[in-house]
Figure 1 (cartoon, rainbow, N blue to C red):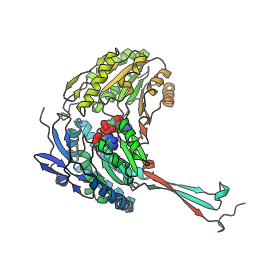
Figure 2: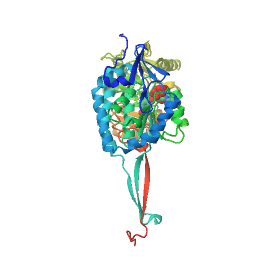
Figure 3: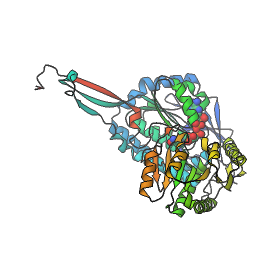
Figure 4: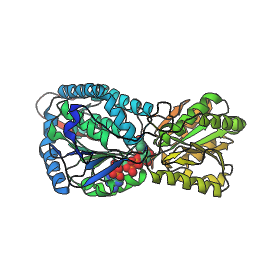
Length: 509
Ligand code: NAP
């Protein structure tokens, strides 16, 4: 394997890092300027564990000054820039991302360990999301309410308008570090909020590069900040009253912690998931198997919308199982820099251990490994499928109870729809579900009863750019992400009541 390194050649990025002992040290943008701090986060590549960069962690005094700047001044600066000009800045950011696309893709590959195609598609999705920002602005809408439906409000009327809350704190997960930063940025600033981003410690670099391009595009520097901070040290920031909205994408455990610390704030919580795929007896077996394999193994199963539970109707169970194993065996695990790689490394060793522990537990319960099951080397693991034949055992498994963030799923059979619904709904998560099949009556019944935020029919769950809204129920979260749909959570309504009593405008009978 070639040694892993990171180089950023473009002049535009020169002021966001410096070289120290041949290592790139990235600065933070907290108080209207790029600054270095003595405390650092070491950023290691999941490809081979080598140190690719360090990121400066601002001290609380600097964060405190930064919060003053953004909440006293910056949140009004951004609001006072007309929407039409905010949109032009977003267009300019998209142009800059096009221009520096290659460096963004390369950074994502080494920083997140994303296979080339996945990294390129995340950058593409981010540009696309910026270009679709004008779809969001039509959701900044209000109401007109006539007064004559209540005797208390005769001769009055109201308009209800949406206005930005003020300052949005976006907390970003490691699995879509660039796209999630871009998406949360767009839906926050379209209605006129200021924006703070806390990047993931595993792979914070593309969020930093994005903030640089935002500033380069002419975004006001007092209305944005990037605060690289280890999550376990972020509770003071989360609790701060100068932040009005928290938009977190992360695990359910983190979601609970953030909710406990946040105090009274508006929240968007995109939390843990892992989805069921229900395969009906009349499904097109080869298509369903190919898509389910992608659902399990794409980005090494480190997706909130990854398939973790495959539930197959009894008559086709054996045939489908064979087809799925065949599809999984076609996937190539390896160095994400190699264009032919399908499955890259897991983000860190603890994720590998988590997967191996789940496999050991399943084996101890008598489950059979149908495919994979082994660590290859470093953070590389085989895509894995585990068969569960005993209903009672399924619910005991870590693979069913928790979200194991790796390319692994369990497969089991069902006899009737009620059983499939019960198996799917009994998990604590409720992000999405996939249904493969043709019988419209069965599909319609499943749609009605599945407790999830999105149902994909003849497709594996994939949120993409949020063209269709997504978001969880139960332990998978609160709120929705999706073009236009998040506006509701970053704006507050304000009712303006006009009283015309006695002015002779209305002459009620
Ligand atoms: P994570 O460990 O929960 O971390 C997410 C972010 O929260 C990171 O920036 C982390 O910082 C920060 N954080 C951790 N503890 C915190 C605290 N006490 N206060 C404030 N911030 C804190 O999740 P991850 O491993 O990066 O991402 C994978 C998880 O995200 C999975 O559970 C996945 O399902 C979920 N996800 C959900 C969706 C969805 O749409 N529902 C989409 C993508 C991912 P550090 O990095 O510094 O620890």
